[in-house]
Image (cartoon, rainbow over all chains, first blue to last red; front, top):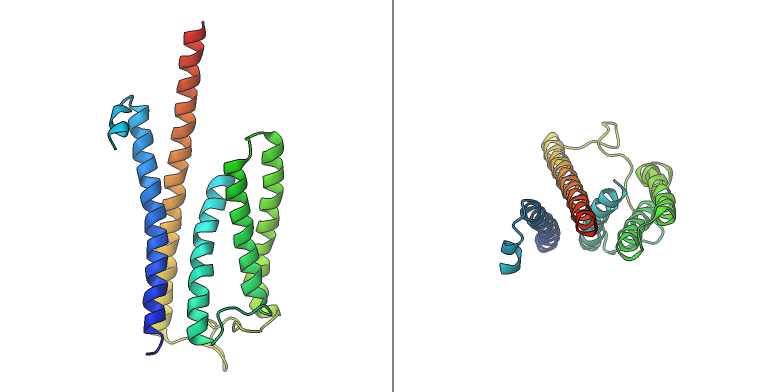
Amino acid sequence: MNGEYEAIVTYSILAAILFSYTFNRISSLSKLKRELAGNPAEDSEE
Amino acid sequence: MLVIGSQLGLLFGLGVIISGPIWGSAEWGVPWDWGDVRLNSYALLTSVALFLVMSIRSQPDGEETRDTLAAIGLFGFVLVPVTAIATTLWRNRHPGVILRESGETGVDSEIKQLMGFGAFSFLVLFIGLVLLNYSIYSMRRELEDENRKIDREVIS
């Protein structure tokens, strides 16, 4: 092994961090959009 | 902008702080070197970002809090050039600038292209996240204004 295992672990961690943060931000944005449109009922269903 | 900057600084900083030691163990044989200036100044920079994110979330918003956090943010800003030139001034574990072509340094053109693609992708991601966060904070402000307006109408 020439660091393949380390590379897989490293990139998986990086991808997990970046994806979870981006997903969190996008959900916040869509929630705010719904609230601003005056339709917060959909939020409580989630 | 301080809120967005500290959040993204922490996100990208943690990415480096977590992945760096894994790579270091494989390549250098040690995960961390307390004598390497770049490693430690970068860790300090990420700690500043962590401190700012936690303070913004826990402290009441006000002029004094904002002034204090802005001053700490400036300290983090000073650490950026220190980290950037650390490998030129104090070479220990990290090599010096390797992208410059010379007798001792230089990178294969294929690796250079790959690095350029990686740097460009991260730049696009960073700009996208800044814009996304900016929309979120603008909308939050708009929503607070609307709520305040409704409260005023109800009271009067």
